Image (cartoon, rainbow, N blue to C red; front, side, top):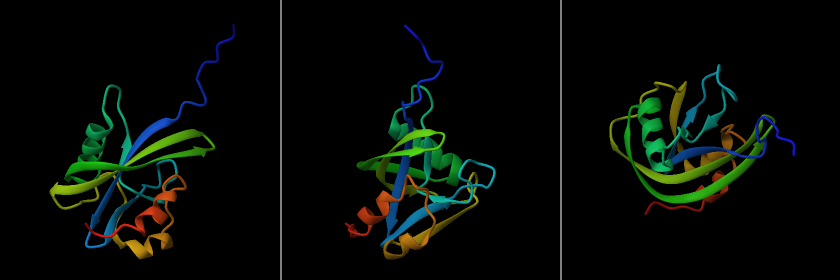
Length: 139
């Protein structure tokens, strides 16, 4: 029986916050020194060992943007294969409950009208959410 050192097909589990206010959605730009630097994305990040997706998302948004969020329903689970390996993104509808976004671990952030989201160079793994979000109206 042969063992490979690293399973190549186990996706990296990542969370993403979809925060919509007044028909605008919050996106952040990845720092140039990170993988896929310069791309826009929905804020969020990797789970740490033993962390639930909700806790990971709350921690990441505090670290990246200095905001506290409430995490609502899951919108989608997105699978994408990059050159370095697969990723599974759990995208949740979220609300900011405390704080104003500040660029701490992101290059910049923007509130983009839902119908203009396709004009931004989002990470390939995040792109399927664009179509979905254009059908969402403020509830």
